[in-house]
Image 1 (cartoon, rainbow, N blue to C red):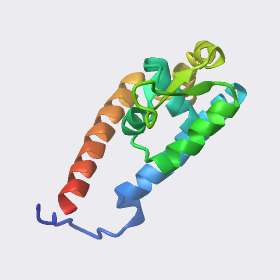
Image 2 (spheres, rainbow, N blue to C red):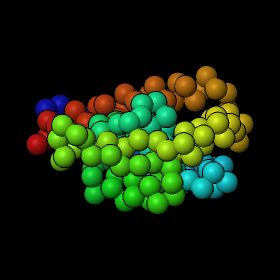
Image 3 (cartoon, one colour):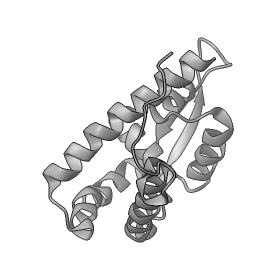
Image 4 (cartoon, rainbow, N blue to C red):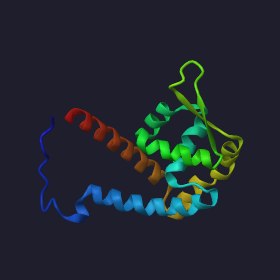
Length: 155
C-alpha cells in the first residue's frame, strides 16, 4: 500500500480536486453526446453498448459487461430497452442455456452508419484538437487502470 502524498497549500480547494474536474467534464461532454445521440434514439449508455456490439456481434452478456465495466444490474435494463427498440436480440446459447448472447438486429447494424458521424461531431462541438482528446483518453485510461488496481488491493 502506498503512503499518502503531501500536497502543498490547501489540498481541499474545490478547484484542485480531480473528482470535481472529472465530474464537471463528464456532465459537459455527456450533454454534447445527448444532443447528438437523441436523433438516433439512443442514450449515452445505450450508445456504449452499441459501440461494443458494432465491434463484435453476437457477444455474451458477461463479455459485454466486462468490456463496458458494468454489472448485470446496470446492463440488463439497457439491453432490454435496446431489444424493445429493435436494435438487439437475445439468443440463448445452444451449448449452455444459462448463457445469453446479444446480437445486433438488421436495424441495429444499420444504425452504425448514422453513428459514424458522432465522434467527429463531438470533436467539433468541443472545439479542441483531436490530439488533445487522444492524450486525455490515454491519461484517463491510465487513471482507470490505477483506480481498479487500488480498489482490488483494498479488498
